[in-house]
Length: 277
Image (cartoon, rainbow, N blue to C red; front, side, top):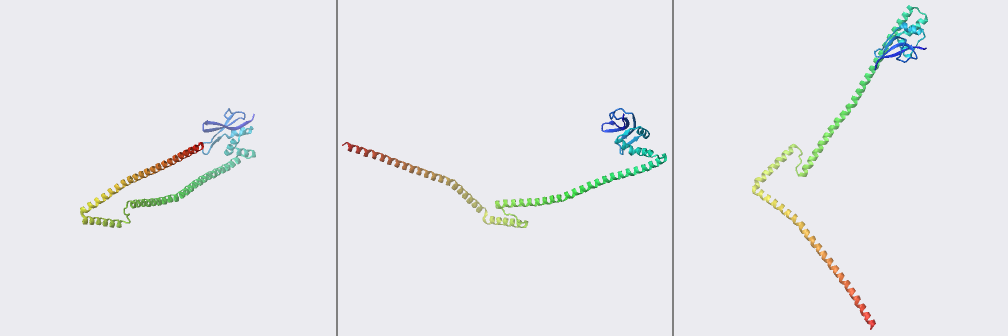
């Protein structure tokens, strides 16, 4: 029978807790065991290991074989090193001195490991800060470009709107305003001219001009409505003349055919009579 020192799992789901046990290698992991010689809690930082050195040394002297995991745990606790010193033949006082030196070395090792972890954390934090700064620098010129492009687009839109308004005013026949001073001067001159015309002519002349304009429009409407009727009548007369000409031509052609047919018949009859005689 091979005896092993190994871990058996305890605890609930996702909260493991292990016992260091001495058991037969043929038994299952969580099966029965001969003796429990320690515990191991991996969820604590740093992991907590509790061992019974006397019982472990006893089972090691009896030939028990620790697994790789248990061997690493015993090495961290100094059990393997103490066993090595005893095999070397040192006294208990010398073993105690060597174990004190070993503990100091272990403390320094833990400090170095903690310093490495802190250095890694600082490096990650610096890297994250640099990445954020680079992202901000890249985003800043893009925002400036967007602002400049937005200003240019607004100016272009204003220019287009002004052009459209000027075209509409030109199409209507209105005067395009050049500047505020010019607009005011031109408006004052136009109003002065209208006032002068009204004072010179009076209401009678204005009514006469309106009547003339109305008569001109009526004449235009009459001419516009008569012209198409005249054109229609001319077209109908042309069609009638054409139909008459075609009728005359067909009649003359028929007469010629009848004459030719009648002449042929008479000539044939005369020839027959002459032969008989």
